[in-house]
Image (cartoon, rainbow, N blue to C red; front, side):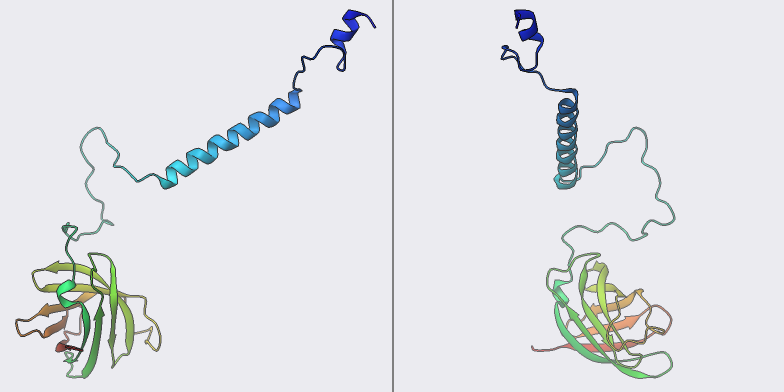
Length: 186
């Protein structure tokens, strides 16, 4: 075999080997997949940062929440615990109200549960607003024996912590219920 044949032969005497076109395609594909995976991890694991925009901030749309901005430290801690009492609606029907609020519950967080006996409704409560000793909750996620035709999700469960430690209860969504709850267990 001549020197020219050895150098051009794939198994010739030269120790210099080259990768085939298919091998380079495979390596490129693996490299692209690794880069995509790393970028995906960074996007999903990195904390979100506000994006700076040029020009004025657009006005909120009609679908935006109309609740005023509330400081992050606002909680329903002063009424955390279990409460029980009676209320009367606008038509004179008296019913039992149970409320349970967890400690550390903030604005727009799931805070606990509420039940009213006469409908009946058993659902979760979410803190909508809090100011001084006044709290508004919205109800959602009705469960158990709730009358799903009558139990309507939304805001309007109002509570006011009185100086005597009792909790005034009222609603503002049509049935004008009013009542007083007492803390259970102390």
